[in-house]
Image (cartoon, rainbow, N blue to C red; front, side, top):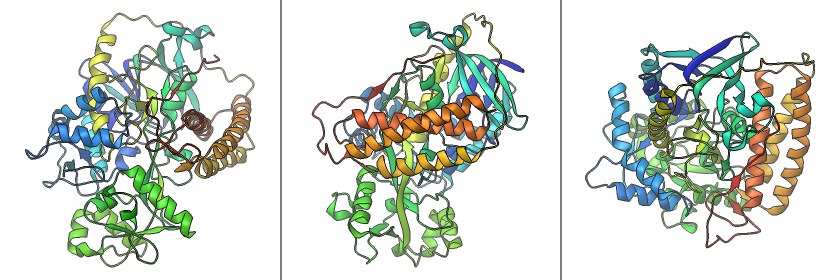
Length: 527
């Protein structure tokens, strides 16, 4: 079994993982693994941009206030302040690496000023391209594409007993998808940057890679999780039978789009003074309520007042994609529905990305720093990933500088596992999880719905565990195991929160508590 040893092991290739790897490579060797191509990350699909103060008429205090307001009382004010105050410096990093933003800033929901840096509506893809090019120029970075992490290697896994406060991460077992072999990757510091878990839901704006791998692996080895019930549903995903989870950016509403019912009537004035520019949780819940009341499948988004010249210049990607499906944004209303978009919860970390397990870091959407609270402000996600990748590098360098002697690592043992001739079990369980999560643990929840979901996930976890130990693992099985773990965490987090706040709304507890607190989930792992 192949062994790979480096100073830093980075799992994931979005903005968080790539920017960490670039900076870490200045002081040590970096191994970066990603389960598809480098560019196959959620960052590539980000249309909106990065929120950062640049106009003298704007202020960091104003951006902080907008973030705290959206976060519904659960943001860590210290984290929010640090991230926003350091935004200009991290944006300069991107510019220095070759990123070029449009001159005009965008306005998005929840913001009280135009402060969103963007490159048309291809912002994420442009950032990803710049970072990948920069990665290729670094001598100290070894990239392994088509490699998916199976599980983390910790002191407890090595010694067959949980090490408690002495638990430390040493690396990961990784499946080479093309070679169908399990390899061992060891490092002085391990960084989870695997993104979110939108594929836990049937309707999602997230790419196929968003299966919560980092969250699930961290939880299985005993890392503390926080606020997993706060799943952000983007209000406007294109509703079309041939469109696969295509997002209609927040920025479209920022430029004046109006949400309308099928009869053409606007409705957001009934739900919030900011109407279409209300925070995402309010807009998504309003659409959900209107759809449930009317029995319709979608609502409309109307940006026809802007005209073709403006739309093709500002939203070239959205315009051309809609046109491919027979929708001319300049003339036609766009059918949209809410879809799972972003996890505000995740592996609980410090501002520097440190988890409860020594030498294990989590950054980006995988982590829960306290930045987003109960509801993320639009275009703060890429910002947090940039800033926290930088703070994580600073702390990780200190750990890497210390002497390190790796313990004897047990080889991967497949035991009596055999090739499966029942792969239908994987696809069936995958679809069942995604369906009941949407029906029972979606935008609006109830105690009974959560109880039903908890019963289903318990049974499915038993089936998946049996399948996992009896058959040779594949990337599909790894991802199924991970989305089942994340689904269970979301359900349990939602059951613990007996109030409605931000992205978690329950019919049985519609009021918000006067004493908001994080939802913490810990697991004593079996090893």
